[in-house]
Image 1: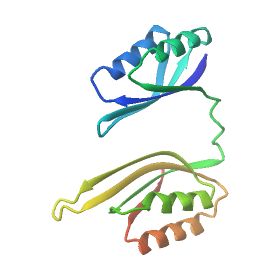
Image 2: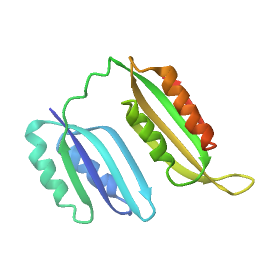
Image 3: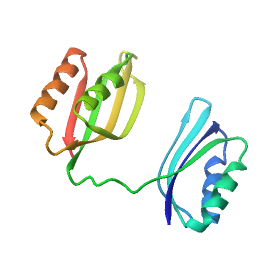
Length: 170
């Protein structure tokens, strides 16, 4: 068995997920993890699929026949050992402005923190109607990180930019 990543996008219309999942099913594959979203008029999906080795060529060929989608497929390596890491949820909300993701992802890079998942969206505030940016993520920190220093820097950035944030061990 191999694990592969399928990334597909194209103009949104009913049946995209059915078409791709049907091909995976015919090839005796199993979708283990997936993310799917409509972004304006486009639809995109990302899947981790486990499939028998002998069915991979058939899967790749069948996916290539879907002309209305841009599809890329990648065989992935085994998951790296995360025993030396702790998993945290990290979330923020703030008035929407440019650079919010960069500010925090740059801090994560500085501390060698890996982002496992990140979801963002903008929603208008109930009373004022002002756009509010929301970010929810899962990050992993090495057990040897100086957590106190990291939290201090995190709070400093949040305070300087009027951003509410939460960091919680999960």
